[in-house]
Image (tube, rainbow, N blue to C red):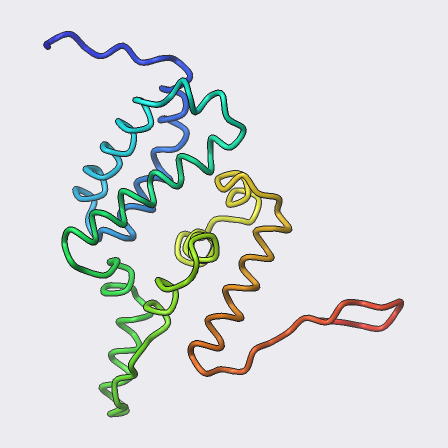
Length: 182
């Protein structure tokens, strides 16, 4: 039991190249570095247990992101709470302060709650792009998608959020010849 676990070199490389992202994602949801470390440790243990099988598949990034998402979701469900970005997000804090100043009534659903209700791919794209600040190319790599597909999921998520929040839905026109579109 005291012997160190010998890890495959490719698994160690995977952990080193993904741990910053995995920790940022988990911390955004769990609210603390220690909770994130605990979740990410569980995630890497699960990934290690099936590592050889994952290497045989084409979608390693997407599959490991799904493991991370599942562990974070289970942790939040066990704790019976929403993701920390809903509770502690700077935008949410600012909105609370404005509500107090303007004496606005509390709305039934806010932006962060609406984000958490998106379908998995749309949710992941929105969290990675707008809450963690990752560029489309990196999101595409993590999700094993084409850049255009990431943009599509982002557009669809924004449309869904607009409808949910009661805002006008902006649609994009396709360019025809020299006529300008949006």
